[in-house]
Image (cartoon, rainbow, N blue to C red; front, side, top):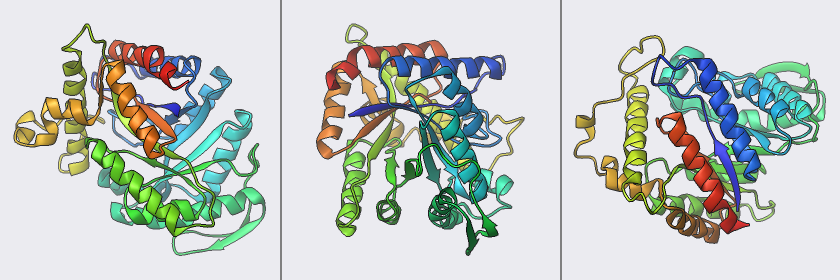
Length: 346
């Protein structure tokens, strides 16, 4: 079982500066590297303070200079917002800068809010077209001269400059539905999945979709499967410690709901979380259910659950640090995970 860190700069308090958040993200990454984590993943989001990363590339390039072993994952580039020539070139440059530590993650995008601003109002549900077309195009550009005349992208003969340090850096697809799993496996891409607020039964279901895709593509080498989970660790001598994490994750998803609903104009990049009353009767938002469904618990409880993932065939567990907690609590949780959970898998 490999471990990775999935992290953004997240801002709920205007009194906390962006520079301070950047330094905190860097410190978490250095902790993860020292703790034996394989990869740090940084995503892409636009014009929203609660997940700050207009491009993963500058963040990962800086981290490349501050680290030596941890791999650097763009997790994920939102395909409809990019030209494939730019994806190929920027990813290749990061691979060169980092001496071959680049991991390329691609996704179709989710927030209509972002599509309205970055893709001329394209329906977010159409983002998959760009994703499916982009994957083989980027690989062709890494190989050399290539011209493309597709449904989404058209360009005359071009190539990736520079070329990546590794001829074909690992490529990952964020997948949920069976078609996405099939596409990823058929195209030799690793798969990243997240159950969001759902329990381990969702992990089983996503794993079954991955295995079905493997069965549908018998001639393709098995790619890697990563599960991304909000994670909060507390010690057994703090029996109420789980409540802090559960309440914070509730706030995170109520904020997600406000952005995803796309019904309110944000003010300078901020949206208030949807009110607790909206979810008072929603089982998933009950704190006990958040505790059960996300990765909240003592080291012993978390080890047992990750062992279950390992038995299913999951290759990588990603510690999702975004959860609206104050930085000191995030850092403490990651330190406890490194100190108590990681050694059980070594």
